[in-house]
Length: 235
View 1 (tube, rainbow, N blue to C red):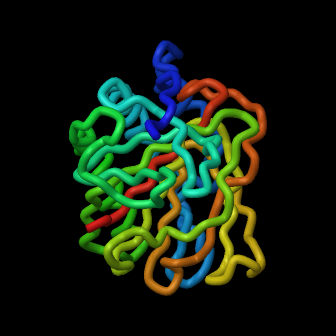
View 2: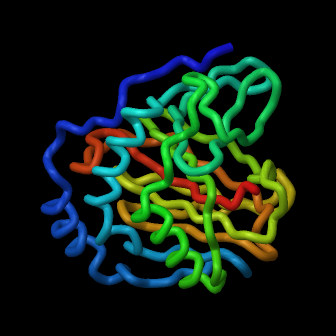
């Protein structure tokens, strides 16, 4: 079944340069901080803020070539979070299961190439977290509307788990849920704001994680929505 496409990223909003300046004041005490979540997992506060405007421009081109869509789970449930991809491989889900493909199943064409600004950010964030040499070949782009959430899951569709996961939070704040290696393990609730980057790998690579229901808020990056980039090494 073809995934249902949804409206693209709101690109007629004011530029984010002024928002970045305002955000710097809001996060002055923590911007640049590296906060440990667990062995092998950190939050890099404000790490992506300086290149957020360039990322936003790149996302416009990605979404034009591969629009956001609501995928379905193997159980035929519609996902509330809208998704698209860029890079050599894209992650997707349908009734046949979760997997990566070099081709967008909606268009039959390769996914848009990963912009240099996104690939470089992923490599630099991974290195800052202690995972040098990360070369992402897949970037899942998630768009959260108010009231949406992402249930607890593990990232385990990759060929192996040697490379870390790099997750970039843009737009309105969200609560990141970070658990253990078992679904029933206790959860840490971590507030993520515009420009924060979470990196986990090594002993933390298969920890369960998710996003709590998104509260109503506004941010110049994408209005009431949150955009998340998840960079992985799929193959």
